Length: 116
Image (cartoon, rainbow, N blue to C red; front, side, top):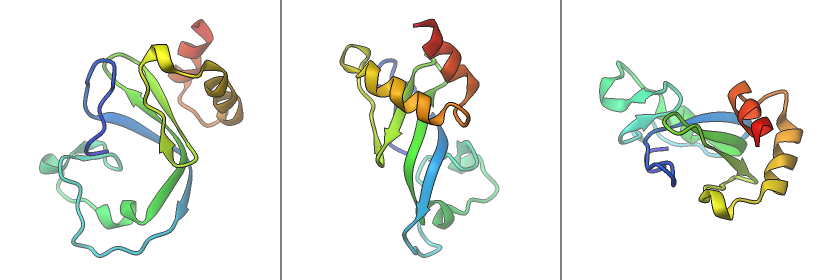
């Protein structure tokens, strides 16, 4: 999350909604995010504490990245964030993704997609 920005408006940070995850890694307590902590939703320098090693032990299988500035959202499918500009997005694949996770995704994403 430290390096991801919206490809359309360049806004940072993006909000992460985890839909499916799997514990895979065991990391030491010295690992830290550099700028932004998506778990605590704040800039690392402004947080009283972080537990980055807990976050780094999980692999996100499915999720959504949401831009707070322009309202766009980007799916995480099979562990890969699909962050394409609007003209290259696969609307059929995104609709399938939304239908699969409709009960777990943020309501703003569903409303925005329904308007399309």
